[in-house]
Length: 244
Ligand SMILES: [Zn+2]
Image (cartoon, rainbow, N blue to C red; front, side):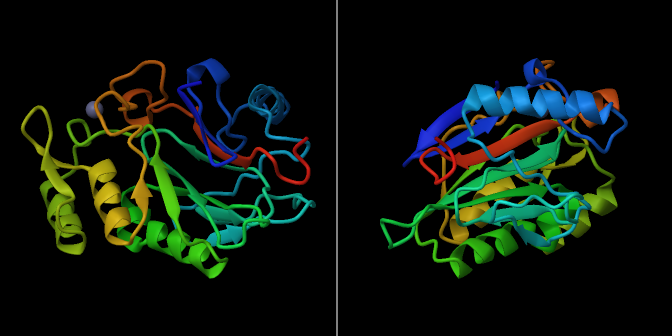
């Protein structure tokens, strides 16, 4: 496990290679992946309900996964939210996995949970803002976000035209890689836009080189290995109705 923490009765975790590939859509044996997911659920104590994942398509749709019945097919979305403690997961290998916990004014209510997958496209198209909006629509007031392992600005090289276009859409995202070529800094851009949106960003992961998927073998990197393996960002209510 790369990172594990607790925040007001909510568990937050980001897996690493120790937990293995957790994606069912990239060619791995689905039965083996399901077993790995169960092992992670047991280790973290996410409760009786399985972690809900979505079918990620680099879009901005936020799926509401509240409720006990998981759909047969993961719905197409790049973010998910739950209001009843239903555990959520998001899969990445270089893109940003972002986990959200929203507190509500109703102390008896479960916290509002969310996850989002933000690559270059999703970030520029506003997937994080959509996710924050979905949290607020469900009564979340104080929202905290954790930006998980992702490729850092030193390592994410893109063509110059792409860097220019991204910078025009989201000022501050363009950077220069460690080897002097045009690049994008997705984690810093996400951090800045979340803060601007009134979200508290957790200090875990602030040192982006220490959380860079490309620089650490314990993390999966599509850019480094063209790997079908994916890491998971996870959030669950520790004292949700079905978690004991
Ligand atoms: Zn890096």
